[in-house]
Amino acid sequence: MKEAAEIKKIPCAVCRDLMPLVQDGVASPESEALVKAHLAACPACRKARQAGQAARWAVTSASLSGL
Image (cartoon, rainbow, N blue to C red; front, side, top):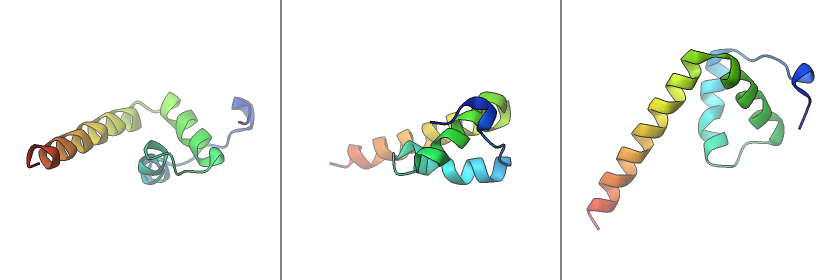
């Protein structure tokens, strides 16, 4: 992984596009580092990530309850 000083900043929209890929473990190491660095500095994207995780959990739970 790159040092923090080497990591470029990305816009919120790009971070939010990449978040599902990072969560699913299919993003490149570089993309994962960009997202993690952005989340460390951006409260709005951290909140969006938490909301996205909660929504994914709710969908998964609803899907499993029908089994």
